[in-house]
Image (tube, rainbow, N blue to C red; front, side, top):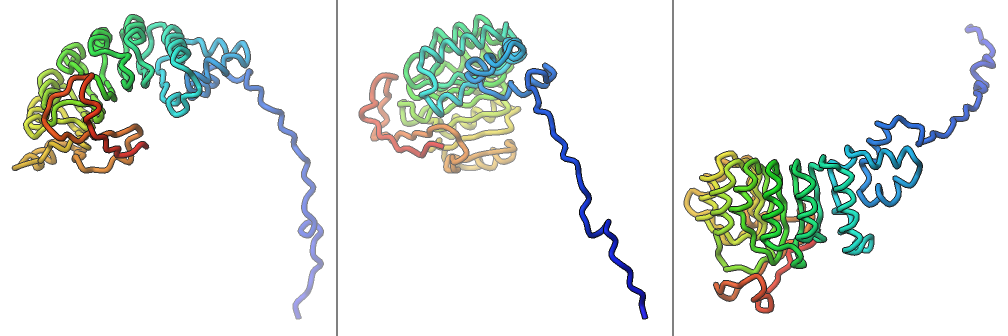
Length: 303
C-alpha cells in the first residue's frame, strides 16, 4: 500500500510577485549616436519639419552633416499634398546646405529643375548617386549634362522621363566611374527603332555593371553594341524594349555573359513607377514637343 503525502502549499499557491514599475525612457537623454541612427530613418521632410523641433539635442543632431549624406524624397511623390513645388525646392536646397558637401546620394523625383540641379552640383562634388523623374519639362538636356559634369565620382544614375532626349555620350564622358545606369524612357516619343542610346552607352560607358533600359527603342544591333562595349556588364534589364528580337545566337550570348537578364516581355510588377509604352503607326521621327497627340499610350500599370 503506497503512502500518500499532503500537497505542499508551495506548489498549490502561486508565489507573490512584486510589480516592477519601469521608468519611461527619455528620448532626449539617449546617446547622440543612437538618436542619430533612429532619426536618420526618417524622411527629409520629417526631419526638417518635425524631429528638429522636439528639443535642442535633436535639433543639433538634425543639423549634423552626417545626417544628410543621403536625401531621398521619393515619399513625397506618394503623397504630393505634403509639399508644393516651391516648398519641395526649398526643402531640397536646405538639405543640400546641411550636408556641407558630404552628400553622396540624392533622389529628387519629378520636382527637379535645371536651377535645382545646378544648386546641387555646385555644392555636392562628391555625389555618387543621382535619381530623378522628368515629366514637366523643367529639366533640359543641357541643364542635366551641365550638372552631371560636376559629379566626376558619380556611380549611379537613374532617370525616368517622357519628353527629354538625353545626351548619354556626354554623360558617359563626364562620369568615367559610372557603374549603374537606369533609364525609363518608355513614355518618350521618338522613332520606332532607335539605337542612339544604345550606341552612346556602348561608346562612353565601358565600366557599367548594371543597365536598365525600360521601354527603349533599341534593336538587336544596339544590344550587340552594348554587349561588346560594356565588358563588365552583369545585370541587364530590357523590359518593354519590344524592338529587340534576340535573333540568331543573341539570346545565348546574353545568357552566357549576363548574370541577371530580363527580357522585353518579362513582367514589370516589381517596378515602382509608371511604365508607358507608345505604339507607332509609322516610323516618323517626332521631336520632343511634337507627335504627342498621334501617339497611342498603352499603360502597363502603376506599381
